Amino acid sequence: MQAATLNELMAYAKKHSIGIGMFNIVNLEFAQAIFNASQDTGLPVMFGMPERFFQFYNGAGMALFCQHLIKDSKTPIAIHLDHGKTFDGVMYALKAGFSSVMFDGSALDYEENVKQTTEIVKIAHSLGVSVEGELGYVGRVGVDALDEGGFTDPDQAADFVKRTGVDALAIAVGNQHGLYKGVPKLDFDRIEAVRKKVSCALVLHGGTGISSDDFVKAIRYGISKVNIYTAMDVAIREFNQQRFTEYEYYLDYTKDLISVAEQVAREHMLLFAKEGKS
Ligand code: 13P
Image (cartoon, rainbow, N blue to C red; front, side, top):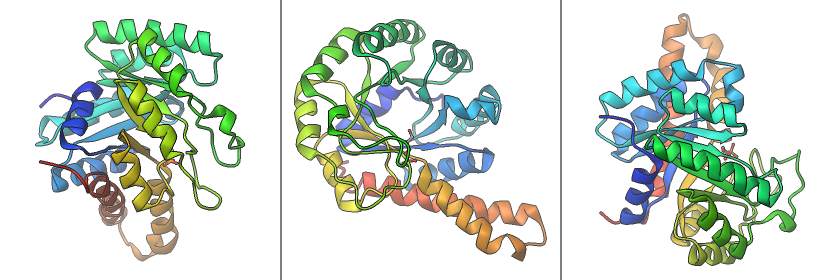
């Protein structure tokens, strides 16, 4: 099997009324864990790699590893560039065979976001790759203040999708990246309002810390893709801190580390598919 595109997975999500999980990869163990969870649950998934991670590992090499996993997959899986921030970063991912790219122009002013996203959509579509854009600003807990002024405006979302031709749109509805301080409060009316105005798939970033009920409700209101990273990071660091010294061999440790990451991915994937139809 070849890597699925974002479009193929979003069509699957809509058809089955589920959300599809995208999990960011730090190393090969993360990739293996996400793959195992997908095979075990029979649910599609997305390997995610943010452009900023390419300073830590070779993104093209990691994509190659993912492609080899996908060759033996019985579920559709995409290789996705998460938060592509630069034109060169997106081109690098396209050359490396990513099947899905995000261009995050949310920090740009609106017209510049439209212009740069449109350019990337043209190039990616000519290569058969689908594109996620972002409108509204999904910041990071502790770095950016949560400001309703930065939430996605439904009318502007309609204009953005029409002009850029994106296949999916990440929206700001009270979600943030990282560990929430207190209980996150999602603006479900806004999700529904954006859903009514745009035809493309909607994406919820900052999945870690959102309650099970809110995930299910967000998917019911129109979210088709949910991004998770911090939950995997926390689970693996806790495992590392509590268990590392028990192991005589690193190889045995990595086997169990994969199981820990796999469990995090599996739980989220099953939750996102909880109200799914076959
Ligand atoms: P969390 O790290 O909050 O789970 O968010 C992940 C994300 O949205 C990556 O784009």
